[in-house]
Figure 1: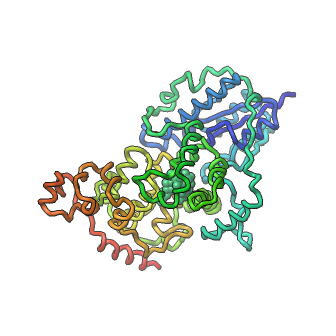
Figure 2 (figure 1 turned 45 degrees about the vertical axis):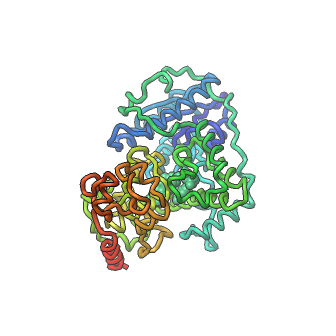
Figure 3 (figure 1 turned 90 degrees about the vertical axis):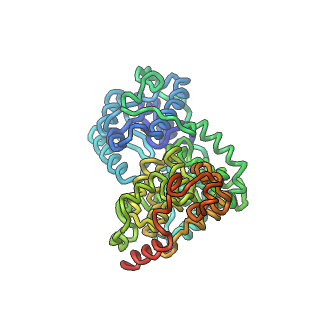
Length: 472
Ligand SMILES: Cc1cc2nc3c(=O)[nH]c(=O)nc-3n(C[C@H](O)[C@H](O)[C@H](O)COP(=O)(O)OP(=O)(O)OC[C@H]3O[C@@H](n4cnc5c(N)ncnc54)[C@H](O)[C@@H]3O)c2cc1C
C-alpha cells in the first residue's frame, strides 16, 4: 500500500528545514502539501488591502515554483480548515496529517477540533515543534514550573542549549517524495486575490524564502555591531527578519545558527532577542488569558483615563510629539516599526495619553507586517507595565529624552515628518518651543503645518502614576 501524507503549512511557508514536512516525507511514500486561506481569520480583517496577504501569496508562489520542479503543486483552498482539511484528506485518500504546532489560543482550538474530526475517520495527526526553539516543558525552573522572569529563563535556555546544539541540525526535506499533482487551481494560474476578496498590495519587503536568506546573509555584516546599533532607528541595522520568521520563510534554527556563529556582544545580544521570542510564545501558550487580560490581574482594575480622540491622533501620527508621529506614520505607510520606537509609542499611548494598551495592541495587530500575537501582546504588556516581567509602572519613557537620545539629529523624524525638516537638531525634538522667527526659518508653523502637543508630558506623567497607584 502507498502511504500518502498531507503536510498542512500555515505560518511555516517554506520547503526547507521544516519539521512537519521532513517527518511527513520520511514516513510516507507520497506527501501532499496544503495551504488554506482561513475564512474565519480573513473575515476579521476589515481592510481588504493588507500587505500580509500579498506576503503570503508571494511566499506561496515561490514555494509552488519549487514544487513544480518535482511535478508537484500546493493544494490551496479558501474556507474553514475544519471543513477543508477533512475534504482534502478524503479526496486524495490521505493516511496521515502532519503539521507544526501553533501556540495561539484560537489556533490550538482549531487544531484540536481537526485532530478529533480526523480521528473519527481513522486518520492520525502528527504535530511537531518547529516555530519555536524550546516549548513550554523544555525550559523549567527548579520547581518544574515555567519562568515568569526573563533573565533566569534566558540563562536556563542557554544552559539547556549548550548540551543540545546538535538539535540545530537541518530537518531534511527531500522533495522528490512529493506527490505528483496536476493542479488547475495553482497559485500561479488563478487570481487568488479575487477568490478571497482582497487586493494586491505593494510592499517594501519582497516575500519568500530566497529573500529571507538574502536578508539573513546581509545581516551578518552588521551583527557584531548589533548591541550598539540596534537602538538607533535611522541606522536600520537590526535584521528586519521579523516578517520572514513570522510567516516561516525562515526557520528559527537558521537564525540561531547565525546568532551563535560569533562570540561577541552583538551576536549574544541578537540571540537574546530570539530567546525573548520563545519566552513570549511560552507565556501565550500557558496563559492564553493574556490575549484579553493583563498578565498581572490587579491591573485589569485600572481606569484608563485617555480619550478616543487622542487615540485616533496617535494612530494618525498627529500628536505633536515628533518621534511618536514619525514612528506611527512609518508604521502606517510600511507596516514596519523599529523596536525602540514600538516601545516609545506604546509607552506614550499608555502612560502619556493614558489609553488602554489593548487599543494600541489591536492597532498594531491590524498594521504590522510581522504581527505575531505572542510578541505583540508581550511587547504591549511590557510597555504598559501590566505584563509578565514588565517594566515597573513608575518607569515612564520621556518621549523628548528618547527622541534626543535615539534620533539625535532627527534623521528618522525628518524622513517621516518632512514638514519638520528645516528645524535645528535641537528644536526638531521640541518644534512647539520655537519662536516665530525659528518657525519662519523652518518654513513650518506650529498649529498650522504641524500640531501643538496634544497633551503636556509632565502633567500626564503625574496622572499616569496616580492611575497606577490607585490600584497598586
Ligand atoms: C509594543 C511592541 C509590539 C511588538 N509587536 C511585535 C509583533 O507583532 N511581532 C514581532 O515579531 N515582534 C514584535 N515586537 C518585538 C520587536 O519589536 C520586533 O520583533 C522587532 O522590532 C523586529 O525587527 P527585527 O526583525 O529587525 O528584529 P531584530 O532586532 O533583528 O531581532 C531578531 C528577531 O528576534 C525577535 N525579537 C526581537 N525582539 C523581540 C521582542 N522584544 N519580543 C519578541 N521577539 C523579538 C524577532 O523575531 C526578530 O525578528 C514588539 C515589540 C513591542 C515593544
